[in-house]
Length: 276
Length: 292
Image (cartoon, rainbow over all chains, first blue to last red):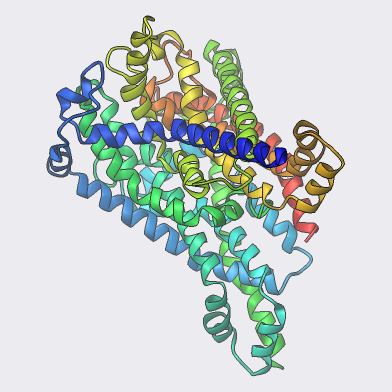
Protein backbone atom coordinates (compact mmCIF):
# COMPACT_ATOMS: atom_id res chain seq x y z
CA UNK A 1 0.00 0.00 0.00
CA UNK A 2 2.79 2.37 0.96
CA UNK A 3 4.57 1.53 -2.28
CA UNK A 4 1.43 2.45 -4.17
CA UNK A 5 1.10 5.94 -2.63
CA UNK A 6 4.77 6.55 -3.29
CA UNK A 7 4.20 5.76 -6.94
CA UNK A 8 1.20 8.08 -7.16
CA UNK A 9 3.14 10.94 -5.56
CA UNK A 10 6.04 10.40 -7.93
CA UNK A 11 3.79 10.29 -10.98
CA UNK A 12 2.02 13.48 -9.91
CA UNK A 13 5.33 15.26 -9.36
CA UNK A 14 6.74 14.14 -12.71
CA UNK A 15 3.55 15.22 -14.46
CA UNK A 16 3.51 18.68 -12.87
CA UNK A 17 7.20 19.39 -13.40
CA UNK A 18 7.13 18.14 -17.00
CA UNK A 19 4.15 20.29 -17.87
CA UNK A 20 5.76 23.32 -16.22
CA UNK A 21 9.00 22.88 -18.15
CA UNK A 22 7.10 22.37 -21.39
CA UNK A 23 4.95 25.46 -20.80
CA UNK A 24 8.06 27.52 -20.02
CA UNK A 25 9.89 26.44 -23.17
CA UNK A 26 6.84 26.91 -25.37
CA UNK A 27 5.95 30.29 -23.86
CA UNK A 28 7.79 32.49 -26.43
CA UNK A 29 5.89 30.80 -29.27
CA UNK A 30 2.59 31.09 -27.41
CA UNK A 31 3.28 34.76 -26.68
CA UNK A 32 4.13 35.43 -30.32
CA UNK A 33 0.87 33.84 -31.50
CA UNK A 34 -1.11 35.76 -28.86
CA UNK A 35 0.52 39.08 -29.83
CA UNK A 36 -0.32 38.51 -33.48
CA UNK A 37 -4.03 38.86 -32.60
CA UNK A 38 -3.60 42.13 -30.69
CA UNK A 39 -3.76 45.68 -32.00
CA UNK A 40 -0.38 47.46 -32.18
CA UNK A 41 -1.41 49.56 -29.20
CA UNK A 42 -2.26 46.48 -27.15
CA UNK A 43 0.96 44.76 -28.17
CA UNK A 44 3.01 47.57 -26.64
CA UNK A 45 0.93 48.06 -23.51
CA UNK A 46 2.53 47.43 -20.15
CA UNK A 47 1.36 45.52 -18.18
CA UNK A 48 0.62 43.29 -21.17
CA UNK A 49 -3.04 42.78 -21.94
CA UNK A 50 -4.11 39.20 -21.55
CA UNK A 51 -7.78 39.74 -22.25
CA UNK A 52 -8.50 41.62 -25.44
CA UNK A 53 -10.68 41.45 -28.49
CA UNK A 54 -8.68 39.35 -30.93
CA UNK A 55 -8.20 41.01 -34.29
CA UNK A 56 -7.15 39.58 -37.63
CA UNK A 57 -6.13 43.00 -38.85
CA UNK A 58 -2.38 42.29 -38.58
CA UNK A 59 -2.72 39.30 -40.84
CA UNK A 60 -4.54 41.37 -43.46
CA UNK A 61 -1.91 44.11 -43.28
CA UNK A 62 0.96 41.64 -43.51
CA UNK A 63 -0.61 40.11 -46.60
CA UNK A 64 -1.31 43.41 -48.29
CA UNK A 65 1.52 45.71 -47.39
CA UNK A 66 4.67 43.73 -46.86
CA UNK A 67 4.19 41.64 -49.95
CA UNK A 68 4.10 38.56 -47.78
CA UNK A 69 2.92 36.29 -50.57
CA UNK A 70 6.00 36.96 -52.70
CA UNK A 71 8.40 36.10 -49.85
CA UNK A 72 6.38 33.03 -48.89
CA UNK A 73 6.35 31.88 -52.51
CA UNK A 74 10.14 32.27 -52.65
CA UNK A 75 10.44 30.12 -49.51
CA UNK A 76 8.13 27.48 -50.97
CA UNK A 77 9.85 27.35 -54.36
CA UNK A 78 13.38 27.34 -52.98
CA UNK A 79 12.83 24.74 -50.25
CA UNK A 80 10.74 22.38 -52.41
CA UNK A 81 13.01 22.64 -55.44
CA UNK A 82 16.19 22.11 -53.45
CA UNK A 83 14.69 19.20 -51.48
CA UNK A 84 13.39 17.47 -54.62
CA UNK A 85 16.77 17.91 -56.30
CA UNK A 86 18.64 16.61 -53.27
CA UNK A 87 16.35 13.54 -53.21
CA UNK A 88 16.81 12.89 -56.94
CA UNK A 89 20.60 13.05 -56.63
CA UNK A 90 20.75 11.41 -53.21
CA UNK A 91 18.50 8.34 -53.65
CA UNK A 92 20.68 6.71 -56.36
CA UNK A 93 23.84 7.39 -54.36
CA UNK A 94 22.35 5.92 -51.18
CA UNK A 95 21.06 2.92 -53.15
CA UNK A 96 24.45 2.23 -54.63
CA UNK A 97 26.26 2.51 -51.30
CA UNK A 98 23.71 0.51 -49.31
CA UNK A 99 23.34 -2.45 -51.68
CA UNK A 100 26.60 -2.52 -53.62
CA UNK A 101 29.19 -1.43 -51.08
CA UNK A 102 32.83 -1.40 -52.10
CA UNK A 103 36.00 -0.98 -50.06
CA UNK A 104 35.67 2.75 -50.44
CA UNK A 105 32.00 3.13 -49.45
CA UNK A 106 32.57 3.86 -45.79
CA UNK A 107 35.24 6.42 -46.61
CA UNK A 108 32.97 8.12 -49.16
CA UNK A 109 30.12 8.33 -46.64
CA UNK A 110 32.31 9.91 -43.98
CA UNK A 111 33.81 12.28 -46.50
CA UNK A 112 30.30 13.40 -47.52
CA UNK A 113 29.56 14.04 -43.87
CA UNK A 114 32.70 16.14 -43.57
CA UNK A 115 31.53 18.50 -46.33
CA UNK A 116 28.61 19.35 -44.03
CA UNK A 117 31.07 20.64 -41.47
CA UNK A 118 32.57 23.30 -43.66
CA UNK A 119 31.56 26.56 -41.93
CA UNK A 120 29.59 28.74 -44.36
CA UNK A 121 31.68 31.83 -43.52
CA UNK A 122 34.72 29.95 -44.79
CA UNK A 123 33.34 30.08 -48.32
CA UNK A 124 31.19 33.22 -48.05
CA UNK A 125 33.52 35.38 -50.13
CA UNK A 126 34.03 33.04 -53.12
CA UNK A 127 30.38 32.00 -53.20
CA UNK A 128 29.30 35.62 -53.10
CA UNK A 129 31.71 36.56 -55.90
CA UNK A 130 30.86 33.48 -57.99
CA UNK A 131 27.14 34.21 -57.62
CA UNK A 132 27.74 37.83 -58.59
CA UNK A 133 29.78 36.92 -61.67
CA UNK A 134 27.23 34.33 -62.80
CA UNK A 135 24.32 36.74 -62.19
CA UNK A 136 22.93 34.39 -59.54
CA UNK A 137 22.87 36.98 -56.77
CA UNK A 138 19.34 37.56 -55.52
CA UNK A 139 17.90 34.74 -57.65
CA UNK A 140 15.96 31.70 -56.51
CA UNK A 141 18.18 29.53 -58.73
CA UNK A 142 21.23 30.60 -56.74
CA UNK A 143 19.61 29.65 -53.44
CA UNK A 144 18.30 26.35 -54.84
CA UNK A 145 21.82 25.33 -55.93
CA UNK A 146 23.31 26.13 -52.55
CA UNK A 147 20.54 24.52 -50.49
CA UNK A 148 20.69 21.36 -52.61
CA UNK A 149 24.41 21.09 -51.95
CA UNK A 150 24.27 21.78 -48.22
CA UNK A 151 21.43 19.27 -47.70
CA UNK A 152 22.76 16.56 -50.00
CA UNK A 153 25.06 14.92 -47.39
CA UNK A 154 22.24 14.68 -44.83
CA UNK A 155 19.83 13.33 -47.45
CA UNK A 156 22.27 10.67 -48.65
CA UNK A 157 23.09 9.62 -45.09
CA UNK A 158 19.52 9.42 -43.92
CA UNK A 159 18.32 7.45 -46.94
CA UNK A 160 21.38 5.21 -46.64
CA UNK A 161 20.38 4.20 -43.09
CA UNK A 162 16.81 3.46 -44.25
CA UNK A 163 18.02 1.39 -47.23
CA UNK A 164 20.35 -0.52 -44.91
CA UNK A 165 17.27 -1.70 -42.98
CA UNK A 166 15.72 -3.29 -46.09
CA UNK A 167 16.22 -7.09 -46.18
CA UNK A 168 18.58 -7.93 -49.05
CA UNK A 169 16.61 -11.05 -49.99
CA UNK A 170 13.69 -9.00 -51.29
CA UNK A 171 15.87 -7.14 -53.76
CA UNK A 172 17.77 -10.25 -54.78
CA UNK A 173 14.51 -12.08 -55.44
CA UNK A 174 13.35 -9.36 -57.75
CA UNK A 175 16.72 -9.29 -59.53
CA UNK A 176 16.39 -13.05 -60.08
CA UNK A 177 13.09 -12.31 -61.79
CA UNK A 178 15.07 -10.20 -64.23
CA UNK A 179 14.02 -6.76 -63.07
CA UNK A 180 16.18 -3.95 -64.34
CA UNK A 181 17.88 -1.53 -61.99
CA UNK A 182 15.27 1.12 -62.59
CA UNK A 183 12.37 -1.32 -62.08
CA UNK A 184 13.96 -2.55 -58.88
CA UNK A 185 14.27 0.95 -57.43
CA UNK A 186 10.97 2.21 -58.75
CA UNK A 187 8.67 -0.73 -57.96
CA UNK A 188 10.28 -2.40 -54.95
CA UNK A 189 12.67 -0.21 -53.03
CA UNK A 190 10.85 3.13 -53.07
CA UNK A 191 7.48 1.69 -51.97
CA UNK A 192 9.10 -0.26 -49.10
CA UNK A 193 11.01 2.74 -47.76
CA UNK A 194 8.35 5.37 -48.45
CA UNK A 195 8.11 6.33 -44.76
CA UNK A 196 11.82 6.93 -44.43
CA UNK A 197 12.00 8.80 -47.72
CA UNK A 198 9.20 11.16 -46.70
CA UNK A 199 10.90 11.92 -43.39
CA UNK A 200 14.11 12.66 -45.25
CA UNK A 201 12.25 14.98 -47.58
CA UNK A 202 10.61 16.72 -44.61
CA UNK A 203 13.93 17.23 -42.84
CA UNK A 204 15.45 18.72 -45.97
CA UNK A 205 12.41 20.97 -46.31
CA UNK A 206 12.66 22.15 -42.69
CA UNK A 207 16.38 22.89 -42.96
CA UNK A 208 15.96 24.83 -46.22
CA UNK A 209 12.95 26.76 -44.96
CA UNK A 210 14.81 27.92 -41.85
CA UNK A 211 18.21 28.51 -43.45
CA UNK A 212 19.30 32.03 -42.57
CA UNK A 213 22.94 32.50 -43.55
CA UNK A 214 22.89 32.28 -47.32
CA UNK A 215 19.39 33.72 -47.63
CA UNK A 216 20.46 36.84 -45.72
CA UNK A 217 23.75 37.24 -47.59
CA UNK A 218 22.79 36.34 -51.14
CA UNK A 219 19.30 37.78 -51.60
CA UNK A 220 17.89 41.27 -51.58
CA UNK A 221 14.45 42.11 -52.91
CA UNK A 222 13.78 39.61 -55.70
CA UNK A 223 14.51 36.17 -54.28
CA UNK A 224 14.37 36.87 -50.53
CA UNK A 225 12.54 34.12 -48.62
CA UNK A 226 10.66 34.48 -45.31
CA UNK A 227 13.80 34.38 -43.15
CA UNK A 228 14.91 37.60 -44.85
CA UNK A 229 11.44 39.21 -44.65
CA UNK A 230 11.37 38.68 -40.87
CA UNK A 231 14.94 40.03 -40.55
CA UNK A 232 13.77 43.25 -42.19
CA UNK A 233 11.56 43.84 -39.14
CA UNK A 234 14.71 44.37 -37.06
CA UNK A 235 15.16 47.91 -38.33
CA UNK A 236 13.74 50.54 -35.95
CA UNK A 237 11.14 51.80 -38.41
CA UNK A 238 9.83 48.26 -38.76
CA UNK A 239 9.04 47.90 -35.09
CA UNK A 240 5.45 46.86 -35.31
CA UNK A 241 5.21 44.03 -32.84
CA UNK A 242 1.76 42.80 -33.70
CA UNK A 243 2.59 42.69 -37.40
CA UNK A 244 5.99 41.14 -36.73
CA UNK A 245 4.17 38.47 -34.70
CA UNK A 246 1.60 37.85 -37.41
CA UNK A 247 4.26 37.57 -40.12
CA UNK A 248 6.34 35.29 -37.87
CA UNK A 249 3.41 33.05 -36.97
CA UNK A 250 2.60 32.59 -40.64
CA UNK A 251 6.26 31.91 -41.41
CA UNK A 252 6.79 29.21 -38.78
CA UNK A 253 3.38 27.50 -38.72
CA UNK A 254 3.82 25.05 -41.63
CA UNK A 255 7.32 24.01 -40.58
CA UNK A 256 6.23 23.55 -36.96
CA UNK A 257 3.58 21.08 -38.14
CA UNK A 258 6.08 19.23 -40.35
CA UNK A 259 8.44 19.02 -37.39
CA UNK A 260 5.75 17.58 -35.12
CA UNK A 261 4.80 14.96 -37.69
CA UNK A 262 8.31 13.72 -38.30
CA UNK A 263 9.93 14.25 -34.88
CA UNK A 264 10.91 10.62 -34.32
CA UNK A 265 12.50 10.09 -37.73
CA UNK A 266 14.35 13.41 -37.66
CA UNK A 267 16.76 12.11 -35.04
CA UNK A 268 18.30 9.75 -37.56
CA UNK A 269 19.01 12.49 -40.07
CA UNK A 270 20.15 15.04 -37.52
CA UNK A 271 22.69 12.65 -36.00
CA UNK A 272 23.77 11.00 -39.27
CA UNK A 273 22.41 7.67 -38.13
CA UNK A 274 24.44 7.66 -34.90
CA UNK A 275 21.24 7.75 -32.81
CA UNK A 276 18.13 5.90 -33.97
CA UNK B 1 26.13 -11.36 -68.34
CA UNK B 2 23.46 -11.95 -65.71
CA UNK B 3 20.96 -9.33 -64.66
CA UNK B 4 22.50 -9.44 -61.18
CA UNK B 5 25.96 -8.27 -62.09
CA UNK B 6 24.66 -5.88 -64.72
CA UNK B 7 22.64 -4.14 -62.01
CA UNK B 8 25.66 -4.14 -59.73
CA UNK B 9 27.79 -2.43 -62.37
CA UNK B 10 25.14 0.15 -63.14
CA UNK B 11 24.72 0.87 -59.45
CA UNK B 12 28.36 1.85 -59.07
CA UNK B 13 27.81 4.82 -61.34
CA UNK B 14 24.85 6.08 -59.35
CA UNK B 15 27.06 7.45 -56.62
CA UNK B 16 29.00 9.61 -59.07
CA UNK B 17 26.69 12.66 -59.30
CA UNK B 18 26.63 13.14 -55.53
CA UNK B 19 30.36 12.72 -55.21
CA UNK B 20 31.20 15.06 -58.08
CA UNK B 21 28.83 17.78 -56.91
CA UNK B 22 30.05 17.67 -53.33
CA UNK B 23 33.67 17.53 -54.49
CA UNK B 24 33.15 20.71 -56.51
CA UNK B 25 31.24 22.36 -53.66
CA UNK B 26 34.02 21.54 -51.24
CA UNK B 27 37.13 22.22 -53.25
CA UNK B 28 36.40 25.12 -55.62
CA UNK B 29 35.26 27.76 -53.09
CA UNK B 30 37.78 26.61 -50.52
CA UNK B 31 40.64 26.88 -53.00
CA UNK B 32 39.40 30.36 -53.90
CA UNK B 33 39.26 31.39 -50.24
CA UNK B 34 42.79 30.09 -49.80
CA UNK B 35 43.95 32.11 -52.83
CA UNK B 36 42.13 35.30 -51.77
CA UNK B 37 43.65 35.02 -48.32
CA UNK B 38 47.10 35.57 -49.82
CA UNK B 39 46.31 38.59 -52.02
CA UNK B 40 45.50 42.20 -51.36
CA UNK B 41 41.92 42.30 -52.63
CA UNK B 42 39.34 44.94 -51.82
CA UNK B 43 35.99 45.09 -53.60
CA UNK B 44 36.04 48.89 -53.61
CA UNK B 45 39.39 49.01 -55.45
CA UNK B 46 38.95 47.26 -58.82
CA UNK B 47 41.97 45.57 -60.38
CA UNK B 48 43.92 45.35 -57.16
CA UNK B 49 45.15 41.78 -56.58
CA UNK B 50 48.80 41.67 -55.66
CA UNK B 51 50.28 38.75 -53.75
CA UNK B 52 51.00 39.61 -50.12
CA UNK B 53 51.80 36.21 -48.58
CA UNK B 54 50.70 35.91 -44.97
CA UNK B 55 50.02 39.60 -44.52
CA UNK B 56 46.24 39.15 -44.36
CA UNK B 57 46.66 36.53 -41.66
CA UNK B 58 48.97 38.81 -39.68
CA UNK B 59 46.46 41.66 -39.97
CA UNK B 60 43.62 39.35 -39.02
CA UNK B 61 45.39 37.95 -35.95
CA UNK B 62 46.63 41.33 -34.73
CA UNK B 63 43.29 43.10 -35.26
CA UNK B 64 41.83 43.76 -31.79
CA UNK B 65 38.44 42.52 -32.99
CA UNK B 66 40.00 39.11 -33.73
CA UNK B 67 40.63 38.49 -30.05
CA UNK B 68 37.10 39.67 -29.22
CA UNK B 69 35.66 37.48 -31.97
CA UNK B 70 37.57 34.43 -30.82
CA UNK B 71 36.69 34.78 -27.14
CA UNK B 72 33.05 35.63 -27.91
CA UNK B 73 32.83 32.52 -30.08
CA UNK B 74 34.24 30.35 -27.30
CA UNK B 75 31.95 31.90 -24.66
CA UNK B 76 28.88 31.51 -26.87
CA UNK B 77 29.65 27.91 -27.86
CA UNK B 78 30.77 26.87 -24.36
CA UNK B 79 27.84 28.37 -22.44
CA UNK B 80 25.24 27.16 -24.91
CA UNK B 81 26.68 23.64 -24.83
CA UNK B 82 26.67 23.57 -21.04
CA UNK B 83 23.08 24.83 -20.78
CA UNK B 84 21.63 22.61 -23.49
CA UNK B 85 23.45 19.41 -22.50
CA UNK B 86 22.76 19.63 -18.76
CA UNK B 87 19.12 20.72 -19.06
CA UNK B 88 18.60 18.43 -22.06
CA UNK B 89 19.74 15.38 -20.11
CA UNK B 90 17.60 16.24 -17.08
CA UNK B 91 14.50 16.85 -19.18
CA UNK B 92 15.03 13.71 -21.28
CA UNK B 93 15.22 11.62 -18.09
CA UNK B 94 12.24 13.46 -16.58
CA UNK B 95 9.89 12.68 -19.46
CA UNK B 96 11.15 9.14 -20.06
CA UNK B 97 8.48 7.33 -18.04
CA UNK B 98 4.83 7.65 -19.08
CA UNK B 99 2.61 10.33 -17.55
CA UNK B 100 -0.67 11.97 -18.62
CA UNK B 101 -0.18 14.12 -21.73
CA UNK B 102 3.38 13.03 -22.42
CA UNK B 103 3.11 13.18 -26.19
CA UNK B 104 1.81 16.76 -26.07
CA UNK B 105 4.58 17.73 -23.64
CA UNK B 106 7.11 16.30 -26.07
CA UNK B 107 5.69 18.31 -28.94
CA UNK B 108 5.80 21.52 -26.89
CA UNK B 109 9.36 20.83 -25.77
CA UNK B 110 10.85 20.30 -29.21
CA UNK B 111 8.94 23.10 -30.96
CA UNK B 112 11.53 25.89 -30.57
CA UNK B 113 13.97 23.89 -32.72
CA UNK B 114 11.70 24.37 -35.75
CA UNK B 115 11.43 28.15 -35.42
CA UNK B 116 13.54 29.98 -37.99
CA UNK B 117 16.51 31.85 -36.42
CA UNK B 118 15.32 35.30 -37.48
CA UNK B 119 11.87 34.80 -35.92
CA UNK B 120 13.46 33.40 -32.78
CA UNK B 121 15.80 36.39 -32.44
CA UNK B 122 13.17 39.07 -33.05
CA UNK B 123 10.50 37.55 -30.82
CA UNK B 124 12.98 37.41 -27.94
CA UNK B 125 14.46 40.82 -28.64
CA UNK B 126 11.14 42.65 -28.91
CA UNK B 127 8.28 40.81 -27.25
CA UNK B 128 10.24 39.37 -24.34
CA UNK B 129 13.45 41.33 -23.70
CA UNK B 130 12.43 44.88 -24.58
CA UNK B 131 13.24 46.97 -21.48
CA UNK B 132 10.02 48.99 -21.66
CA UNK B 133 7.19 46.87 -23.03
CA UNK B 134 8.72 43.40 -23.06
CA UNK B 135 7.28 40.54 -21.03
CA UNK B 136 10.40 40.24 -18.84
CA UNK B 137 10.24 43.95 -18.03
CA UNK B 138 6.65 43.42 -16.91
CA UNK B 139 7.74 40.50 -14.69
CA UNK B 140 10.54 42.57 -13.11
CA UNK B 141 8.24 45.51 -12.49
CA UNK B 142 5.53 43.36 -10.95
CA UNK B 143 7.97 42.15 -8.27
CA UNK B 144 9.35 45.66 -7.78
CA UNK B 145 12.66 45.30 -9.64
CA UNK B 146 14.11 47.60 -12.29
CA UNK B 147 13.77 45.91 -15.69
CA UNK B 148 17.03 44.72 -17.26
CA UNK B 149 18.01 46.39 -20.51
CA UNK B 150 19.07 43.04 -21.93
CA UNK B 151 20.86 43.98 -25.14
CA UNK B 152 22.65 46.99 -23.62
CA UNK B 153 23.62 45.63 -20.21
CA UNK B 154 24.16 41.92 -20.90
CA UNK B 155 24.29 41.56 -24.70
CA UNK B 156 26.25 38.31 -24.75
CA UNK B 157 24.02 36.66 -22.14
CA UNK B 158 20.98 37.67 -24.22
CA UNK B 159 22.44 35.99 -27.31
CA UNK B 160 23.31 32.89 -25.26
CA UNK B 161 19.72 32.66 -23.96
CA UNK B 162 18.26 33.04 -27.46
CA UNK B 163 20.58 30.44 -28.98
CA UNK B 164 20.12 28.03 -26.07
CA UNK B 165 16.36 28.22 -26.42
CA UNK B 166 16.74 27.05 -30.01
CA UNK B 167 19.22 24.26 -29.31
CA UNK B 168 17.92 22.86 -26.01
CA UNK B 169 15.06 21.14 -27.91
CA UNK B 170 17.65 19.55 -30.21
CA UNK B 171 19.41 18.01 -27.20
CA UNK B 172 16.05 16.91 -25.73
CA UNK B 173 14.94 15.35 -29.02
CA UNK B 174 18.14 13.31 -29.46
CA UNK B 175 18.48 12.30 -25.82
CA UNK B 176 14.85 11.29 -25.30
CA UNK B 177 15.08 9.10 -28.40
CA UNK B 178 18.28 7.56 -27.03
CA UNK B 179 16.58 6.95 -23.65
CA UNK B 180 14.05 4.67 -25.30
CA UNK B 181 16.71 2.09 -26.08
CA UNK B 182 17.69 1.85 -22.42
CA UNK B 183 17.47 -1.76 -21.23
CA UNK B 184 14.37 -1.83 -19.00
CA UNK B 185 15.25 -5.20 -17.47
CA UNK B 186 18.58 -3.87 -16.31
CA UNK B 187 16.79 -0.93 -14.71
CA UNK B 188 14.32 -3.23 -12.98
CA UNK B 189 17.16 -5.41 -11.69
CA UNK B 190 18.99 -2.39 -10.31
CA UNK B 191 15.84 -1.25 -8.54
CA UNK B 192 15.36 -4.72 -7.05
CA UNK B 193 18.88 -4.50 -5.69
CA UNK B 194 17.85 -1.30 -3.95
CA UNK B 195 19.66 1.22 -6.13
CA UNK B 196 18.34 4.77 -5.63
CA UNK B 197 17.41 7.11 -8.49
CA UNK B 198 20.76 8.95 -8.30
CA UNK B 199 22.77 5.73 -8.37
CA UNK B 200 20.70 4.53 -11.34
CA UNK B 201 21.26 7.83 -13.15
CA UNK B 202 25.00 7.74 -12.52
CA UNK B 203 25.71 4.10 -13.21
CA UNK B 204 23.10 3.14 -15.81
CA UNK B 205 21.52 6.16 -17.50
CA UNK B 206 24.65 8.29 -17.99
CA UNK B 207 26.80 5.49 -19.43
CA UNK B 208 23.94 4.61 -21.78
CA UNK B 209 23.71 8.24 -22.91
CA UNK B 210 27.47 8.64 -23.37
CA UNK B 211 27.51 8.25 -27.13
CA UNK B 212 24.34 10.27 -27.88
CA UNK B 213 25.72 13.00 -25.61
CA UNK B 214 29.00 13.03 -27.53
CA UNK B 215 27.05 13.30 -30.79
CA UNK B 216 24.90 16.16 -29.42
CA UNK B 217 27.98 18.06 -28.20
CA UNK B 218 29.80 17.73 -31.51
CA UNK B 219 26.89 18.49 -33.83
CA UNK B 220 25.90 21.50 -31.74
CA UNK B 221 29.50 22.72 -31.72
CA UNK B 222 29.63 22.60 -35.52
CA UNK B 223 26.45 24.68 -35.81
CA UNK B 224 27.18 27.00 -32.88
CA UNK B 225 30.58 27.94 -34.32
CA UNK B 226 28.67 29.43 -37.27
CA UNK B 227 25.88 31.27 -35.41
CA UNK B 228 25.05 34.28 -37.58
CA UNK B 229 21.39 35.21 -38.07
CA UNK B 230 20.68 35.60 -34.35
CA UNK B 231 23.46 38.19 -34.05
CA UNK B 232 22.72 39.83 -37.40
CA UNK B 233 19.08 40.52 -36.48
CA UNK B 234 19.57 41.57 -32.84
CA UNK B 235 22.83 43.32 -31.99
CA UNK B 236 24.75 43.54 -35.27
CA UNK B 237 27.79 42.41 -33.29
CA UNK B 238 27.57 45.25 -30.81
CA UNK B 239 27.65 47.16 -28.62
CA UNK B 240 31.24 47.64 -29.78
CA UNK B 241 32.42 44.12 -30.47
CA UNK B 242 30.74 42.57 -27.42
CA UNK B 243 28.66 40.10 -29.43
CA UNK B 244 30.86 39.79 -32.54
CA UNK B 245 31.70 36.14 -33.04
CA UNK B 246 34.06 34.77 -35.66
CA UNK B 247 31.28 34.25 -38.22
CA UNK B 248 29.95 37.78 -37.81
CA UNK B 249 33.45 39.27 -37.87
CA UNK B 250 34.26 37.61 -41.19
CA UNK B 251 30.90 38.67 -42.62
CA UNK B 252 31.47 42.31 -41.64
CA UNK B 253 34.98 42.33 -43.10
CA UNK B 254 33.78 40.85 -46.38
CA UNK B 255 30.41 42.46 -47.03
CA UNK B 256 30.53 45.62 -44.90
CA UNK B 257 34.21 46.63 -45.30
CA UNK B 258 34.76 44.83 -48.62
CA UNK B 259 38.16 43.55 -47.48
CA UNK B 260 38.12 40.21 -49.27
CA UNK B 261 41.73 39.34 -48.44
CA UNK B 262 41.35 39.67 -44.70
CA UNK B 263 37.88 38.08 -44.62
CA UNK B 264 39.29 35.09 -46.51
CA UNK B 265 42.13 34.72 -44.02
CA UNK B 266 39.45 34.71 -41.31
CA UNK B 267 37.44 32.17 -43.29
CA UNK B 268 40.41 29.81 -43.37
CA UNK B 269 40.79 30.17 -39.60
CA UNK B 270 37.10 29.28 -39.16
CA UNK B 271 37.51 26.24 -41.41
CA UNK B 272 40.51 24.99 -39.43
CA UNK B 273 38.59 25.44 -36.17
CA UNK B 274 35.57 23.53 -37.46
CA UNK B 275 37.81 20.79 -38.82
CA UNK B 276 39.26 20.09 -35.40
CA UNK B 277 35.75 19.40 -34.09
CA UNK B 278 34.74 17.55 -37.24
CA UNK B 279 37.70 15.21 -36.86
CA UNK B 280 36.32 13.88 -33.58
CA UNK B 281 32.70 13.78 -34.76
CA UNK B 282 33.62 11.75 -37.81
CA UNK B 283 35.47 9.23 -35.66
CA UNK B 284 32.40 8.69 -33.48
CA UNK B 285 30.06 8.37 -36.44
CA UNK B 286 32.56 6.16 -38.26
CA UNK B 287 32.61 3.78 -35.31
CA UNK B 288 28.82 3.46 -35.32
CA UNK B 289 28.96 2.82 -39.06
CA UNK B 290 31.52 0.04 -38.61
CA UNK B 291 29.58 -1.41 -35.68
CA UNK B 292 26.50 -2.17 -37.77
